[in-house]
Image (tube, helix red, strand yellow):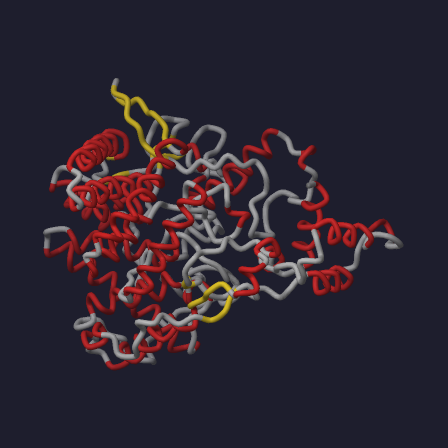
Length: 535
C-alpha cells in the first residue's frame, strides 16, 4: 500500500493534474498491479539519489496506462431534439441563439461505458453505472453527484440520472462523491430524492417510484446514521446533520495541499489525520474549499485552509435539504398509499423544522446561520446558503421569509452586478469571494420566487437577469463555456432560468461595459479580480 501511495504521489507531482493519472486505466489485463509496481520500483535503479526525472515518469505512465476517458463511448440522449418547447419562451434573439447552443452541449457531454471497459472493470478506477451519464466536462470525465442535480427537461436524462443513482446507492449504501472508486468513502449533498421527484413530476411513473423508494430510504438512513449529531439548546435536544468523512488520508483528485501529500502513513500525526478528515469532509460538502469551514484555535470562523474543521459546523443548507427530503419521501409514500410510512416522514420533517428553528434560526439577524459545535453559537458570516430553508420550504412562520428577504437586502451580498458571491471573504479559496457558483444562484433565485411577496419575486428575477447576462457575455467573448462554466449544472441552471424568465430576460449589447473576466485556467465558476467582476 505504501508503494502504491508513493507511485500515486510521484505521478501527481509529475503531471499537471493529479486527477489525470487517477483516471487512466491500465493498458492490459495482463499487466497486473504487481507488474506495474515492480516496474515502478525499477525506475529508481541507477538514478542519482533515487530521483526519477519527469520525462522517465511520463514514459512509464504512457507504457502502462491508457489516456484518460478510454472507458467511455459518446452517447446522445435519445429524446434530444433540436427545438425543445422551452426555446419558444425566450424573447431575446441573442439569448435564444445561445440557449440553442447550450442545449446542443448535452449531446457532447453524454457518455456510456464501453464494452471493453465492461469486460475488464479491474483495469479502471471507474464506478460502472448501468445506464449512460452526463459528465460535467473538461477534465471531469465521470459522473459527479451534485452536478447531475440540475434542472432536467429531457426525460431520458432524468431517468438515467435517477436510475444510476438508485443502482449506485444499492451497491454502496450511499451515493459516492463521484463515479470513481477513490470516492467510496465520501458522499455529497443528498439530492437523489429530488432527482426522482423531477422525473416523477413529468411522467407520473408510479412504478419507477416504487423501484426508487428503497434506495431513497437507504440514502436518508445513511445520513441519519453516519452524519447526524445531537445538540442541546435552551434545555432541549435536537438532531441535525453535518458533513463528517472518517478518512484520515489525503483525498484523491487534487495535487495542491498545504502539507506534503507524499509521506508514508506511518509518519502522519494525529493532527494531520484530523486535517485530512476535515478536508475530505469539505469535499463532501461540495464547498471544497471555503472559509465557511475555517475554525481557529478559539473556535471562531477565521483562519486558513489548515484550520478547516468542516465536521464542527452544522450547515444550514444540508439540513434544509434533508428537511426537503423528508417532505418529499412523505409525499412519495402517500402517493403510493403507504400512509404509515408517510406519517413517519411527516414526523421526521416536523422534528427537523423544530431543530432548524431552535438551533439555526437567528431572530436578531432574521435569517438562518451555520452553527459551531465548538462555541455552540452561530457563525454570522454571509453565505447564500443562509437562505436555504426558503428554497426548501422549511420554515414555520411567513414572517421568517420576509425577515430573510430583508437580511439578504442588507447583507452586502447583492451589491455586485454579476451575481451573488459564495461569501464576502476573499480567502483565496474557490468557494469564497469573488467567485459565484450556479447551484447557489439557482437555490437563491428559486427560493425568492417561491415567497409570496412581489418584492421577493422581483428580486429573484433581478438575480436571474444578472446571472444570465454574466454567463452570456462570457460565452459571447470566448465562444465557449469554460471548465465549470461548461459543467452540467451551469448549463442546466442557465437553461432553466431562460425557460422560467425567458420572456423578460435580455442579453444587453455586446459592447456592454461590464464584460466579465473569465479565468480558463482555474476550476471556478467565474473567477475575476474584484475590480472587474464584482465592482
